[in-house]
Length: 289
Length: 289
Image (tube, rainbow over all chains, first blue to last red; front, side):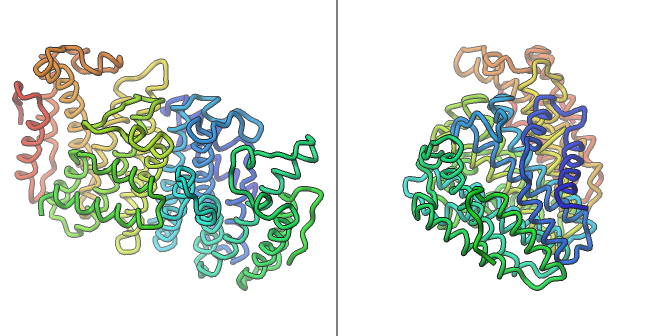
């Protein structure tokens, strides 16, 4: 089954169980809104693709890993959109969770998604203790401190922000967790997969920065994007469009070369390149791999 | 070692590791403030007391369970104090986390504590897979939906609040988890311990309600407490002071009688009674057990 179909099914089934009829209706609705609002599922698809490339032998466990990763990602978006952070009214063209359901349910939906992420994996401990234990520790590190998502977001609250630590934690940690988790879920040596996740995380970040400038300019004749408006660190601000594009090419090339030997290496690399083209502004094309 | 000394040491060591020098300083400070602001550690002490009564054979695992329970409790307090919920400026006589460190770091400190709770337990999976797996699932249920803390707090956002489901989830879930976790941590049959946690959770709630009325009246000549001010459900509002006191006596008596046969039953019961006297307004005394 295609990773994107698998992950939607797994997310649906995990959320159905967590929001039965005894759940407060507002929280149940906010959770659904947070998870099913048109996300591209980049991280869980990456996780499943790595598992499949490694010769997956326990699909329910990789599904659980993908679900946990996506729940943590959605939680961070919901809390990131809160009035005290980005105060974003929209997310993927729809009202953000706090706009649709209020700030209190947005805080609680984020909290619940974090809990659910670990709850989904915890069930696999009896059947696959070693792999599940590694997955749980991996995701706790990717979500928490000192180098996970929460730490990354907390750098935004400091006067002096170490830009690379900020990006590594806020974006890179969960990408690296996605590739490593895919390997762990099928019992493959996982450490060699970290570099792929790190490079791809950074590549997505640079592609985002490019879209923020070129996308806007193409559609609206408005060269100034959100990064500049929010004074966020951006590869385009630091390197210019050409410099950022060169950096993206290098990152994708390094990502490709980092992929460890495995049964499905070729298909995995082809899929990753296709995915990178999807997120690149349409007037650019990759010079990579 | 006394449970209260053990738990402080375990909390300190868990937080030290999670806030090394590469952690954003504001987040590290907010986490310390959230955890070390004079909490009574009721839940983790209960967890450790049950483990010791059952003939504890793996103290590091019970410590981890106690730490995880306290981190989840602290996370819920930090988020509960946020401006969008109770907007509390003080907690235990000190500035609440959002007052001291800002709303963003309060949101992130709560998120991080939830992650840490599961991370602390995840480490024990390799050495004690069955017990750790049960503890992880237990705490995910106690913190999330449909019957955990987040669900309990979410009932506050509904127009019609089912009072008993609200209390059971918001307060009872973590108390029940504390007694059950103590048994799981030492491999004892855990289900028979749930009733003790449930009754004690409710007893603490009623004692709180009584203190909110009698404590205030004694000290300040101010009979109207916070529950009434916030229009919160309260046992005193529903039953009057005498009715609530009668209910408390019954709950403590039921709690005592529910304690399963175990090597340290007598000492555990004595400790619980002592603890209940501590939280009772001083002009009342228990007619129980």
